[in-house]
Picture 1 (cartoon, rainbow, N blue to C red):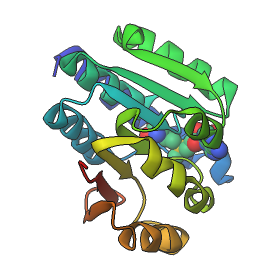
Picture 2: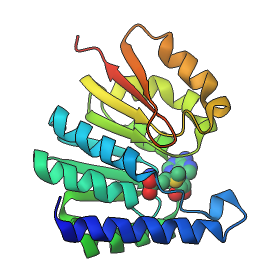
Picture 3: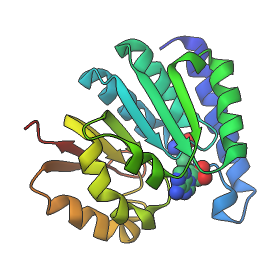
Picture 4: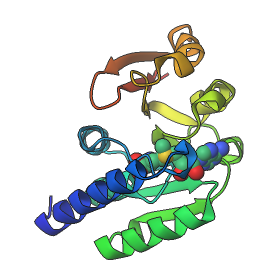
Length: 196
Ligand SMILES: C[S@@+](CC[C@H](N)C(=O)[O-])C[C@H]1O[C@@H](n2cnc3c(N)ncnc32)[C@H](O)[C@@H]1O
């Protein structure tokens, strides 16, 4: 990775940790993904050669920058959605600082709407990092919009195991996918859609 981007990402993550430490309400925090998880996502995007990447839960763009740098290598594009317009503005500014704006479409939108509007098999790679209680409802669309062989990564499956228990059970019981838990950062569930 370009050392300037690496330094910017380090700064952004440190800023996020300091920002969140001062906020009592969870929803006021940026809740950036752990750097090790972000690195794992970026490697997976590259390994898959993923060109159509969807992120659900942009926040101020920390993970988006990692995904954007990865699709710059694959020749792809990231669409990242968040319901919070202010955070999306911060993400836009951070992408501009990193020189990565051209690789990303930021949307102020509900994840449920982005999924329901997506055509079957649209996305090579999806990173799901929004409000966990909604994930069960997302599952039918998540599996529908993943491309054959497409990969879904879901953060916080170890740190918030109880909140994603029903979602993980749905995934495990679905014969169209195979999954594993990567114990990286807060725990990332990796789900691959069968090719057929
Ligand atoms: C954990 S943070 C995302 C962190 C980000 N991926 C990162 O690593 O920098 C969750 C984000 O999901 C957004 N969010 C919550 N509910 C959502 C929904 N229904 N649709 C889209 N975004 C949502 C919140 O506004 C918040 O910014």
